[in-house]
Length: 149
Image 1 (spheres, one colour):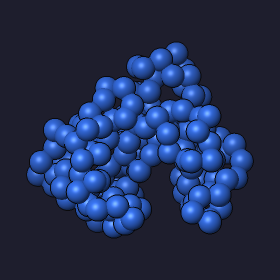
Image 2 (cartoon, helix red, strand yellow):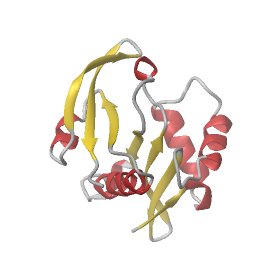
Image 3 (cartoon, rainbow, N blue to C red):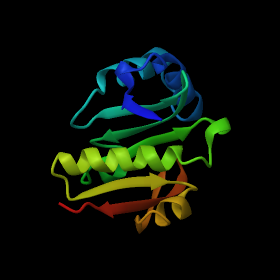
């Protein structure tokens, strides 16, 4: 499996369509593509695509902000999405690890995420619940991960 910045992947348009369909319907898909092309890292924002055998598997982003009610927190693990055919094969875990590595390399001591339904997945990988927030009129779990220097 290869994980690289989205801007370097030929699968960027397809992954942008996934993200648009999953979370970003309020904006044109072209805006999603533009964001992925600009989020090249190494510092946040850095959108990543996991691929293998000439096909995209999933995506994740190291971002500066993600939850409007918590602009005081940064950086964020955001937009983790794996194609249904490739779930439960370690793709999300590999993407999360890559984002953590990048955040650590940038000198961050803690990283944040929020999730409406995947708290057990993240807790099993060392993330700690840090409360409940509301996002788009839905309760979400705020979580953090301490990054070793």
